Image (tube, rainbow, N blue to C red; front, top):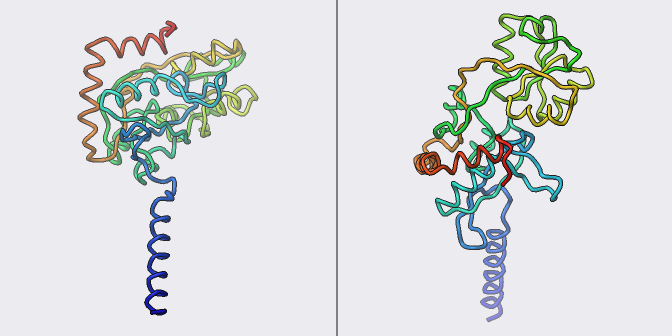
Length: 263
């Protein structure tokens, strides 16, 4: 009897321990269930890219922006709850391939190399590259970059653009994880110029009279939403994007974040 009781007690303890381990969670899971029973999708972004995504310090640490509003509109239409996770731009695709996030909205251009690793939706917004410098730098053309140090964001399409420029003009390319780092290094003289998306740079230039720049003609495809390879959500996301284009909701978001109109 004593042995039977001892074995039973051990079995109960083992089952209880396994159950506890199974419900503890390790923080690496992506899709889960929210408080209202909806499935949660985790959006990866780099919250240093206003007005696409940035941290609203006036109300705390909430991540807001065009991409966030777009993601909320799509996931709400499809019946999902959205969670936004901030990380460095260069690590977004790796995080998705590792299963740590479900989608990427970060002003990401669907390049050929990226398309080998993830699936992209249709393009939802198109902008241009801007060569940014200080007003007293006298940099007004690509030729003026000769012998200069140019800053770009790591893993961004602007880095590819800098390499393309370097084939024609002798420049030194340096990269940083975050856009504010690039702007700060430009202002302190570590960079002579930088390449940043024009819609993003507009906000910095409105706040800082020392900054100037000029846009480059671009044949880039614009920004798209990245999803895991073979994801069934790609088709659904495209359907909602098309509906938003047709019913005017996309135009409202563009006017809100890029046109200066209030919400």
